Length: 182
Ligand code: UDP
Ligand code: MG
Image (cartoon, rainbow, N blue to C red):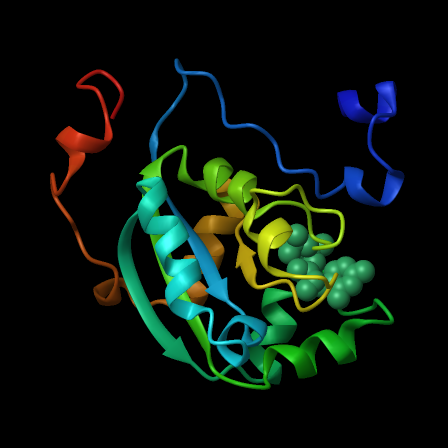
C-alpha cells in the first residue's frame, strides 16, 4: 500500500497518479522517456513554452517529431483506459491536432519528467508543475509522460523508429551532472 494511502494526505482520486519523487542518488541511472505534447498544447500555441520547460530543466531531447494520432495507436497507448466512460472523449481530444512526440533523456528521466509534469488533473496539480501551471483540465492536460521504465520502453517503441532517436554522446553532460552522477 502506498504510504500516501496510509497517511491520507492526498484525495483518493489523486493517489494512483501521484508523481513519485525521483530516487535519491545511489540507484540513479541514465534513462529515456516518452513525452507527448497533447493537442491542448498545440491548440493553445504552447509548444515552444513546454519544450522550453524540459530543456531548461536539463533533460536532453534525443528525438522529436509531429504526428497525427489515430484510433489504433490511441487504443494501444491508452489500453488501460479503453473501458472508461471518458475514453471516447479522450481519444477525440488526442486526435484534434497532431501531437509533438519527444524522447527525453537524463538521469532518472522517467521519474523526473513525471514529477515536473504533475498530477493528472490540472486543477489539482501543484503550482510549478507543467500541468499545475498551464491547464485547468483533467483531460486537456498538456502532456503525456511515461509512468515507469517498462512503459517508457514500450511507448518509445510505439512512437519512434530506432533511427529517430539520436545518440547525443557527451553533449552538455559536464554541465548537467557531476562526474559521479551520470
Ligand atoms: N483522463 C481523463 N479523465 C480521467 C482520467 C484521465 O480524461 O478521469 C485522461 C487524461 O488526459 C490523462 C489520460 O487520460 O492524462 C491518461 O490517464 P492516466 O490515468 O494514465 O493519467 P496520466 O498518466 O496522464 O497522469
Ligand atoms: Mg498514464
